[in-house]
Image 1 (cartoon, rainbow, N blue to C red):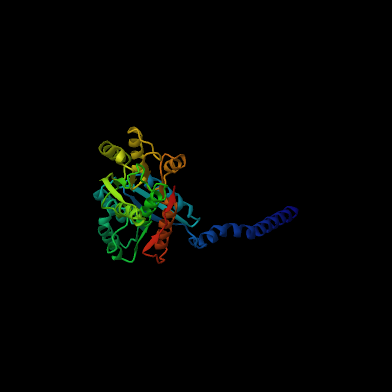
Image 2: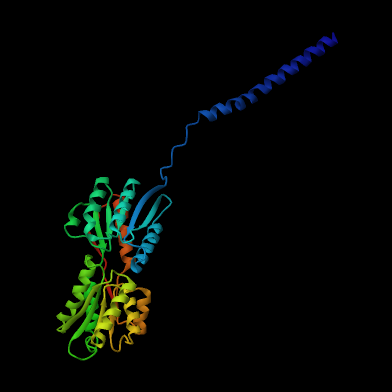
Length: 341
């Protein structure tokens, strides 16, 4: 009897233990099912958005455009936030319009959100605009101004630059403000050499015209001895200045250069010819490259004109970002030049 009683008690204890353990096991068994049933997390409302910006530069070995494109990239990156990024690709047109057109085609095929274009040839703006318009991609033209008619072709293009008439005028005013008004040999006439950029470029045209206009407007008599294109290149500036100095010698009062790169070359030729800037000849450029600003301070260059690459590049980027965000942009965005003399 005792054995039976003992067996019954043991059995009852075992059943009680199983019953107590069962509720604790239930949540553990159900947990995976509950986790599987949880809804997938929704994408964050502030997910990162990346915009593609294609930048075409007419050629990388241009002094001024090197500063410009570097500042452009730097400033665009500085505008990034945790939720907005910019994928910037900058390409070298190598001074070849066909090459640049192919680059634009590639950018459009890649689905860029906006183009920033420093044209190899201003006259090709219509072609680039037509391609961009067909793809619905806005264009910010920089540094080389398309014609007024070309700028009317679409409401999603703009031009960022400085009025080249102002830069030419400032060059002339720098010379006119000298005590002898630029007439270093005292013959009553300012005899000058003009080293141009690309004659097709409106900047070259205006700087050439308005630098001399500033002199004649001041009542100064002028004589053009020599005018040739140097295509913005330092080596061409040196070559052309050397040719002019060999041909006209001490008759030359002033060498005007459409940019500082060519002015640096002209300075080398002046030194080689035994002339001294500020003493028996004058030299002016445009861009205010750091080296040329120092030369003005040292008296080895008569003057230059600040072509504000920081102001222009920032304005271009701001315009591009407005296009990306669907905001309106004015057709012309001007940045003033400044005299450095």
